[in-house]
Length: 192
Ligand code: 5GP
Image (tube, rainbow, N blue to C red; front, side, top):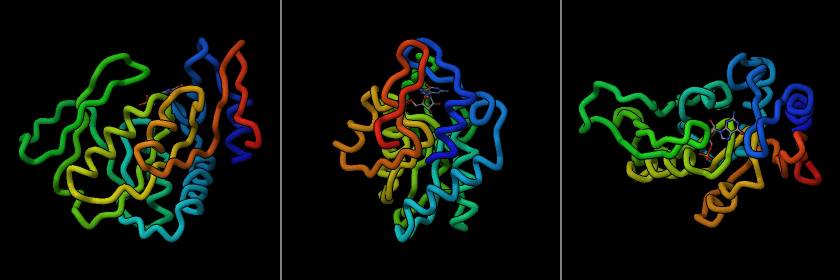
């Protein structure tokens, strides 16, 4: 996605060789016009899949996910990271190791909002090792619903998440793919 690639080049800040900071348009300040375009692009890529719900994880997945759900005309659900007061019987729970916080969190989704006949599109802001996406997919599978695919705004292709998710049989569609963050520079996968 050309517009997103240009935004990453203009505003992305490389932190070490592993982390890209994009707090001017996605992770702190959010660019609603760009998020609208991101949503439209996911809708175009997953057209004809009969999606009934969009699922993401708080907080940075919410903006791209809500824009996608708005255009699809379906609900968006975000998995919560905080321990909620809800009874355990009422929620689906999975453990997810956080790449950025280097700790394991429980993520939860209320049983009220997912059904076995749902066709779920998973959306997230970044893909690194695939922990968040696998956790969300496990929740969908606990319900007995289908994962239509995984839509990622920024994939770091030098980390194993994309390969692992594809090997597990999931369709992964990333709007931009980064080959390397070496030498403080963002290098995109060729042909992006
Ligand atoms: P994974 O679960 O695939 O290992 O990592 C993806 C999650 O970690 C995303 O939900 C995202 O919040 C965070 N993340 C991973 N890599 C980066 C990064 O380079 N920059 C930012 N801002 N977040 C990242």
